[in-house]
Length: 306
DNA sequence: TGTACCGGCTCCACGGTTCC
DNA sequence: GGAACCGTGGAGCCGGTACA
Image (cartoon, rainbow, N blue to C red):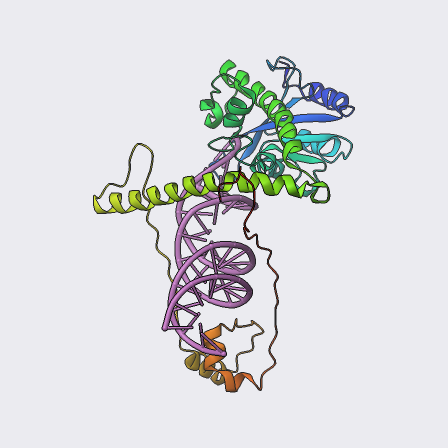
């Protein structure tokens, strides 16, 4: 695990990385709870076969803005190098923002994989590494340690070297899953899709109705018994505020103050009915949207329940 | 802790079905 | 034919999640 602190060494390593086709990258940030967070480390894996992190490069860039800018110019802005992050939006804030090119985000990939293909409780890197790639329990306790302290502890460096390893493995697995679920609509077998849908529709309705019923009963029971937390659930309360004004009052205020506004008012069926005569003399802008629906029809198939 | 984004919830509109 | 109801889907609000 090369931990590079010397600027000349980091510049040399960046020069070598420019020839890599793909890099798996992670960062550690100091003072993240303040308004001025500082980039502390940039960890990079150029070899996805490295499962231990021994080949992961760790650049110490704390309070070295020139080095960070050099990394952005040579690596982040380089269209020829694919860069893979988990939650790239966060890392990009410290690494060039819109200057960054050819970025892949494993968090976004994971979100787009249907649950049935890869069941997982959430899309954290730790969860994906454990559930999709079968890494042993991933310890993320050091994630929120003090990355502004120097020297960094051996535990922090051992933690830092593994994130690009997890990112690389998770990335490979997500690409495999993506291939399974991204099928061009033009080449889909509609007969097979229809048959499969109708085969599982009955089971889904059975399960879905039970889940909905259980949720309703749980919410009612917990509310009635003043229980806000159970082993598996937490009851949360939220309120929504809606404000109303009489249209006549609003119209009068607009006229009195000669207020100019182009904001359109959506005419609900009730408003159209109430102001039918007035609206006849006003220019009405129509917005037509189209929706696509699926409707089950009878199927003569012994394997389809209904 | 700050920021961006996602998903649950709710309201509303529309089309289809059922009933009188 | 019209009213009532139901299922579906769009839009918008708000809380939760993701990262360090």
